[in-house]
Image (cartoon, rainbow, N blue to C red; front, side):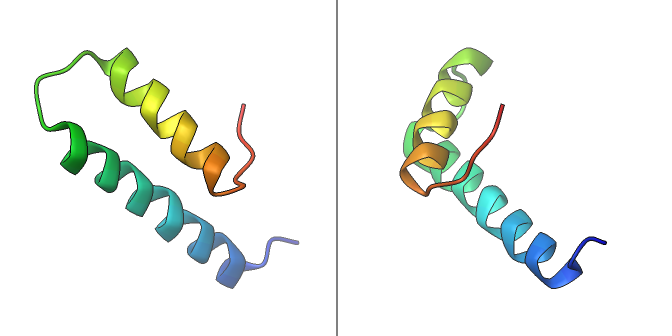
Length: 50
């Protein structure tokens, strides 16, 4: 069973990192640039992804 509180906390953290990346880089870049930076931030935060 999924713990909704943990899922919500993780969702908030991931969305927050995505917003942070976009604010730092600004608009108009290739998606691959944002993806690379978000992957870096997720790794730094200890959030596993694939």
